[in-house]
Image (cartoon, rainbow, N blue to C red):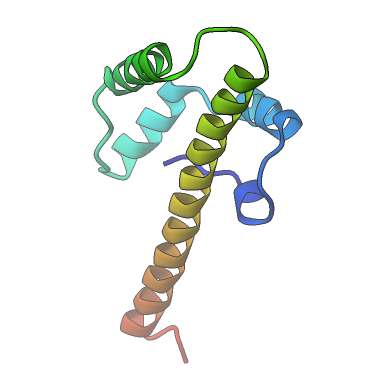
Length: 111
């Protein structure tokens, strides 16, 4: 997971979501970093599959008629996705902090 500190402080707005898209690192750099630390890299087709599933959900479950109902349904879908991403990022941050604390204790640098 590539995280940005903003998700720990506030729910992103449309403006910050656009900014986060612009700041998103090149996936090749992320993969090289993961490889350097011997971390598993997601399947290259993962994002494409998720995008297809989201498009299929929207096609089947969201009213295609333009208007307020469609806009509200799409916003609700986006808000659920953002909330889940924020929750995952916060959980990762807590786990990372706990791992760092444990490493310091085991390595004797916690005193």
